[in-house]
Length: 284
Image 1 (tube, one colour):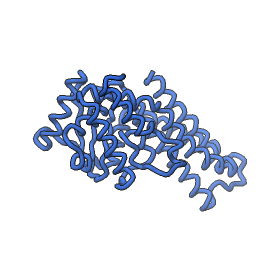
Image 2 (cartoon, helix red, strand yellow):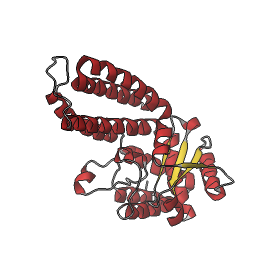
Image 3 (cartoon, helix red, strand yellow):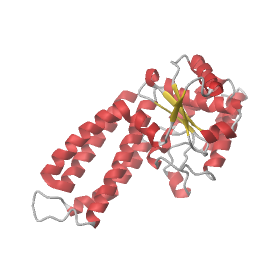
Image 4 (cartoon, helix red, strand yellow):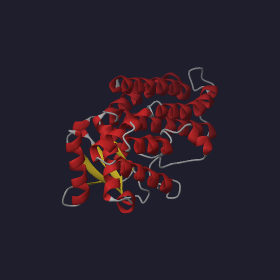
């Protein structure tokens, strides 16, 4: 099912890019957009994980550089019966983490310096167990492709907006750009990016929470970690990256106001904590 959804996301990007290209430059724009879409589709599948890791300045570490962290990940991978993923540290104080990779054989987990500093070993294990749950459930491909596509659509909207400001979109040539289509595109592209993010089912977070509790053997530690990360997310900003990647993280690092929460890529943290507490009490 994840493969089908990934293909649908790539097809959606192609359609929007081609339409936008025609709006920007007529027939020539359509051809250029089609070529760009082919490149984006290929890059999204093969390199989107590397793109996202680089976006956050994540640095790969080995066992010699981070023995305790490496040990936690190895034990969790063994508990989940999945290959040992690559381990990255993100130079950010905001505590958070995400997993990426097109399949369990090419997976990576990334954790911020702030999370390593602010959480206990048990809480870190719960968080990383959650991320390895995404890996085992094969969520990571569709999540990282969605992040790449959402970013590309947001970029298109910015290009079109600046084009309108500096005179792009005005042409006497019938085959040229369409100003009305550009205006529509400026509005539609960010909306499409948001919908792509929301297409990642929020139920995946519940399943990953359960996997994290199972792998670490401590649902309450993961619940405590979620509570801490949520609190810090509202106080300590993430300095790099983009809201287009918010759904990758265990908690949205770009938390906004009440309006933003209506379109949240994550289920309510309070509900996730309640489910984990019920799991620990044997009620689920």
